[in-house]
Length: 432
Image (spheres, rainbow, N blue to C red):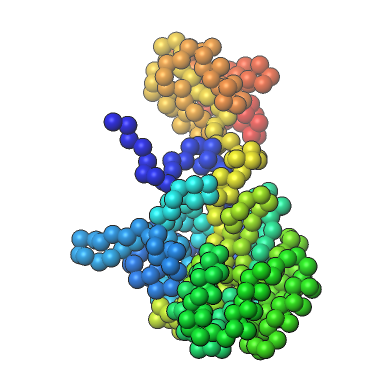
């Protein structure tokens, strides 16, 4: 019986791994550029860590199981909660602001389709210790930087502020749990269900109408959007303050070099329940799902027993970016492979072949050894097919003389060199 991977869990072939590594390298470059310290958290965490505030959508899709002691565990569905746990415990005495970065695999029991896999990779930026718009704007800056460096300069942002609707609902004594339910419905485009719940909770008709208008209001004309949103929110001072905060974040990001298109969406909601301020998504033309998303979560660390610590961050979808780039046939790196093939002929001993390979590698020359007994013409054909530049040939004659023959496949020239003549070898390989 053939054995395949579980649904939504993908093998990555060499070309896919090469692309994944390229994206990871870009993210790590931006970690260094902005001062984010890379950390790792466990793939397996306690169920409660994510059940508390990650949101209904994630709770419904977690891979849950019990260990041998009967404790309920999950494969992490996202990473921000894990990092907030870390900040509330092992990093609680570290000076702030604290910038942390990660690259991690996550697991959700989604229906496998384009852009949704049950195992997927994310690269994240999390900034703790500041409520300043400068911190929120920095998350937009790093997001722009990553996408531009990958080569996805046609990206755009969609930004909002979940505090607008939270403050509006709080005016009518709607508790946080019910706020979460309403925001989840709005995120899922279940506006009528959200309205039904708000009426049940005795939210005023004017407020419900305002939320309906805010959900529909979005666009790239910032002046118009903010003017209309401010008029809609005119009776509610606290909600207006959140709108003003969003405007300041965008202006700060623009001053900080974020020249990407920014769609303003005052009624934007996201599935994660811990967001309480600025939120955003980052997308690409022609694709309905986002490739990056994040926002502000000022009470998450405190929820896990830490001291009050504001935070803001994002999670870049590495797996989605990979799928997009492969589908669009964008520039994808070839798997790294040595440019030199070493082949033995004419009764040479395996020991001498191994010694030659070891000597060359000690000189920093990457070498792939031919181990299947190919004849020389076939070995040359193999080397050319795989983009190699040199083939090192050793036979009985070379072994007796402690030499190697190096053929340049581009210039079609060949020289014989003493194995101990490091200078000459390096000259031939162009490494002198």
